[in-house]
Length: 419
Ligand SMILES: Cc1cc2nc3c(=O)[nH]c(=O)nc-3n(C[C@H](O)[C@H](O)[C@H](O)COP(=O)(O)OP(=O)(O)OC[C@H]3O[C@@H](n4cnc5c(N)ncnc54)[C@H](O)[C@@H]3O)c2cc1C
Image (cartoon, rainbow, N blue to C red; front, side):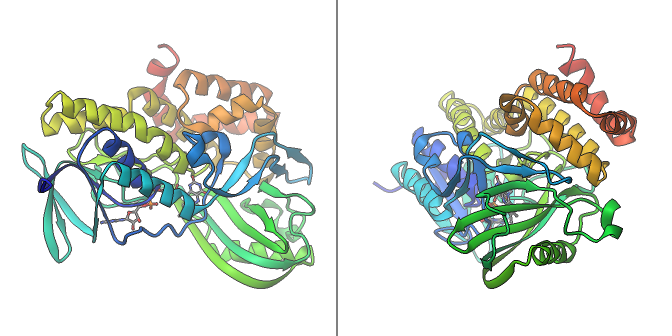
């Protein structure tokens, strides 16, 4: 039997977000296509995640390394061992598992680049570079950070997370006997004159034998800390511990917009993943969030299509599932937290994380999850404020009066705290 020339859903982009939504929508019986530059799509980034954030055991098993007790090191070299398992994602295994699910749902693959999307009352048309136009009832933009198919009228310079990382064979142990440093804010390696410099941390993983993944990271900055400075910092950090690098297998430059304005909603193209603001403003993470949220969003789209909703209404229902009001408010709170963190010098930021990781694990995990209710997120923030040292309280209070923070608070107070 020949397949229809129009898809129910056409997903643009084959990253974690695109593949998970394609798999979930196809599993619900929809006719789904994926347009990606290559098949299988390339996944060049090194991904890590908390193991308990995967949606199911099969995907949680797609990991290359597991660390049951990651360590956080603070500015003064004190440390906290976390009882929450962190993993390095095996990109090939996760990608193959999602592709396998797509095959189960009969997803059709097309290679190429989408140029633009146009909408008619019945659906949408995607023009491809040098190729035929594709038609669908709904087009999903899953093209990653900075993806260009969504309309956005808001403009703001985003805070960027930047990092310089290497996978390398080392002589000596850069993690001083630990298996994984989730954040190492130790500044012992920096010259005295750098004592008031912008803080960056080492995100480090022992990969076995003499191999390590080591990444010097600036959590967020506006404007961003240049990658070359982070590279120099990583070199200083390693030199100060007499670590010699012998072979560099991979080099990674990270640049993640942490607080891009949400796209205009509703619009006829649905956004999913990093392109639609799903990166957590406190961590820069979105991979397992996309894996988890794909099911709800696919369910909403399948229901809408089964009801015979118009193409416009299907898109509306999709946006409601990607960004329900509650999660928009939670994001506002996370954005407020980010604004506050941007103001902190090295020592106050270290005190902040000391106080943060002293919260009950369920609290700091919930704050990092992005799916928590705004009331719960606000409660955790107030608990942290109550426990914070005086210098941190002073910064948080003064940040609250900055124009950008006021803008966030104005949008929040009536709905979040008084609901
Ligand atoms: C170096 C780096 C490391 C990161 N590490 C982590 C981490 O450890 N954990 C975590 O949770 N998050 C991490 N992130 C943040 C974020 O989760 C990733 O950016 C993640 O890849 C986002 O997934 P996505 O599927 O939304 O987009 P992407 O993975 O970027 O996938 C989008 C795909 O769409 C394709 N595409 C773009 N435009 C078009 C077009 N016009 N037509 C067709 N295809 C198109 C792209 O080629 C790409 O394959 C990292 C980001 C970077 C840059």
